[in-house]
Image (cartoon, rainbow, N blue to C red; front, side):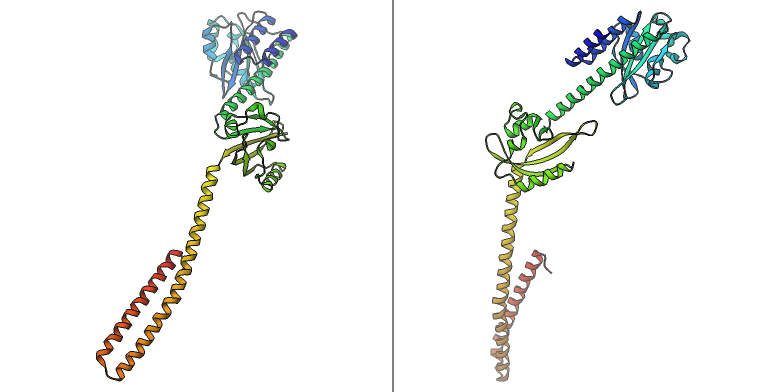
Length: 372
């Protein structure tokens, strides 16, 4: 048994597929449990999914594949439902087989043992099943063997599940357009995606084990911003900032950086994950927008100065013209020179029209600038 466990673990470490490992478990079970026809079923969202059953008939495999678990869903479904081993020595008279009894008996099956297996956190991963063509109860030694096999299945399937999740995550991260870098707690690179290489010019083999700050920072990287980011990270908080970074060829670029602490399943701090995006064009657009805003503000200031000057330099002469026109009109009235007074009236009307136009221009300017 120890030799078989060693071979199974060797296959597991070498990266064997889930199906290969399940088939090996079946063969080991059939070798050590006389007359057994073994099967391995994976649990997912209330159902059992067949992984391997090399000696069971196809019709039986199809009967239970993707079936809901339950206390009356045969030994396999009952074991998954109760999370306890189920030892059915006589299918014909066991109430847990319910609607599946006739199909099992038709396939020549008379007994079925089922033992659930679990992951490291106690989550149900699946069920190890052993079927027999005769009524059969397990001996204590056989129960111990099956329990060891179920434990081995739990270890193997948990690792496979973790590896599949890592591969799935790696595929997702590889397709992210932003650069992604994983570092240890000291900032040394442990993994980067392809986008990181496109962004910085560094190949993975050129950065692994090296401090990411030494790779990307340079003379124009703002040290105050770096200190603020480090302080947030030391407190276990995410940090986000815009930094001026340098590529492998020395070219600089503006980098939108978002860094989060990474923790393992026990809550232990194990490193950081950083997302990077080249925002050089955005920074340049913002710079141009700022410059345009400053030019607009300067133009507005000059306009205000001009209008203020116009108000003073033009309004004052007009007021003088109106005053002298009024004095002239009074003098002509006193001398009874009515024919000449028409000219003073023209001067008055024209000056007042010009004053009204000036006031309208000033009012319109105030409305545009938002002043009351």
